[in-house]
Structure formats: structure tokens, C-alpha cells
Length: 382
Image (cartoon, rainbow, N blue to C red; front, side, top):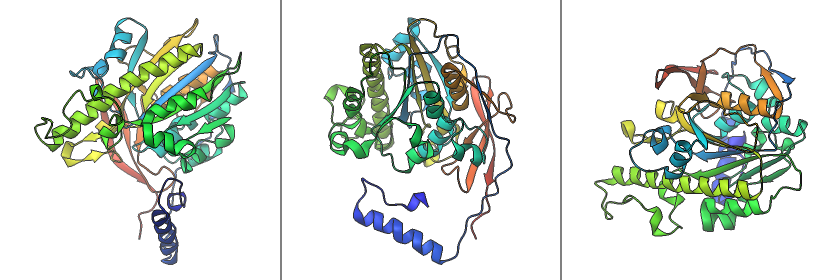
């Protein structure tokens, strides 16, 4: 039902179409069944960390794929700042595995710490939710985003978020400045003296249309021609160039976000990842919502400030979203026991983890990622 609900930021006509479509579908008597397998609940165990961070920032970008980061081996200088951080030992980068191929699904899985397809009871209970664990541990929690909140926040436990700001709360600023508007939200969310906090930021940047990330900014952000008129070989190359421009802007944005982390005197972890990857014309597909290796593989980077914060993993190591969640929960003082855990087995799920849900098993094979056969949960539509 939530997919048909009217949402802020959309036109009255669009919202009316959604409402009437929901009504029409129900009149037909169509029902979508869900045959989710039985899963044992996770066990959340208090396990105080040796050096609990004063602050954890989790910065999530949209639609960023691993192989377009220079630091991960891409030949273009798309991440000069991050590459310098890694060379100097200030940060470590990791090969990430997304939990799902769409933002709402991916963030619901990541922030609730759920690994298995069809584990709806764990998702909906929010018992292992990262915000909830942080609050229980004495942290103030923040959700700051230049994307729409809508039903997304409902999936990640809004009751456990102390300060929530999305595009709906600053639509004029985001429309005028794009992801640059996140700094206004950070200005309004300065920490109180001695405050411990978890800050999750969701930004758009590399989402289609790619040039939207930097079109409001000075020409220096157009490093590669993003149109045929500007010198691109064809429309496909122009789009890929625009994507690389967006990633280079992302690198600059990460650097400025970390400077804000320092300026606020935050002591702890600054972690960057993406909700999912992106298809860039492979097999004629642009976008995401498809279960492919390009969508499954996302970058990760972690930088610590202050004493006692051990690295999450080694440079270039594979780190699934679920492993990232477990690491962050551990830093907040909790161990998550999952009776169904299988080392090295993860999943890329589809866009609707609550309904008919396609998924593929993901396993690391050397320096690559292999996806298993396509599976599904729920009965097919009549």
C-alpha cells in the first residue's frame, strides 16, 4: 500500500493517479501472496566496546558503483582526495556488497541489520535497528537527507531518530543547491557539549540524471564532456562521462563533509558507502533495480578520528552491507547473534523486500563477485 500513498514533492495529478490506481487494483480482487520462509529472530547482546566512539557518521550516496572509484582501480582520477587519504594511511577502502538493488530496500536491510530474504519479522520489529541500538547506548540519533523521506523513514524506525530532516523539510534549498544543502542541515544539527551521536546522511549525487549532481556548480566540475556537442563520442559516452563527473564531485563533497566532522570536533568513525550500484548501459540498461554484479558492488571507505578506533577491514577487502552493520553495532556496544548466519553468504535483493521479492545469492570469488541463480519469494501475480 505504501507504494501508492500520496507523497510530498509530487504533483496533485501524480498523487491522484497513485490513489486511484491502488483503488482500482483492489477492485479487481488481486492479492499478492508472500510465502516467506521461517527465520529465527536475531539475538541482540550487550557487549560494551573497548573504545566506544563519541560519534559515528554513516554517509550513504545513491547509485555509486565500485569500479568507478579511482581508489578501487578506475583509471580516471574520479577520487583524488580519497586516493590520497588511502595512500597516506588516513583511511581504508573496501569492496562493498549491497543488500538490495533499490534505495528503500537497501536502507531498510542495512539499518535494520537484516541479511536473509524474507526475514520480515526482523525487519518490521526494528529490534536490531541501528538507530534503536544507538539510543539504547546513550547516543543522540540524526537522519539528514537531501532525498525524500516518505515511507523510507517508516522502514528504518522513525521513533528511534531524534532529529530527522529530509528533502520535504528543505525543498527550496535542495532544489536550488542539490546535495550542497546538506551543510545547512548539518549547521542546524551541531552537537551539544559532550554529546555522543549517530549521524546518518543520505545524499543523491550519482543518481540519474547524473549531471544533476553538478549542474548548479562551477564549470570545473565538468571534467569530462557530458554531451556530444561538448565533445563526447556519442550519447552513451556522454552519459558515462556525466557519471564520472558526478563521482568526482562526490569525492570533493566527501572531503568537505569530513572537514565538517573535524570542525565539530567529532571523535570516532566517518564511514562512506552507497545504497546500491548502477548500470551504465551494459546490455542496454541504465539505472538500477536489476540484480546484476554492477548493481551489487558498491564502494566503502572508513576514516577514524581520535584514539582507539580500529579499522573495519583491510584495504580492498570485501565487506557486505550486513558486515558493515555488524561492525557499527559492535562499536555501539552490541553483538548481533544470527542463528542462520553463514560466513561468506550474502544476498542481493530486489526493490520490494516486503512483497514479491527477487533475490540472488552473492559470494566472493577472488577479486570478483559471483551472483547465484535468480530466486523469488511470494506467489506470482494471477
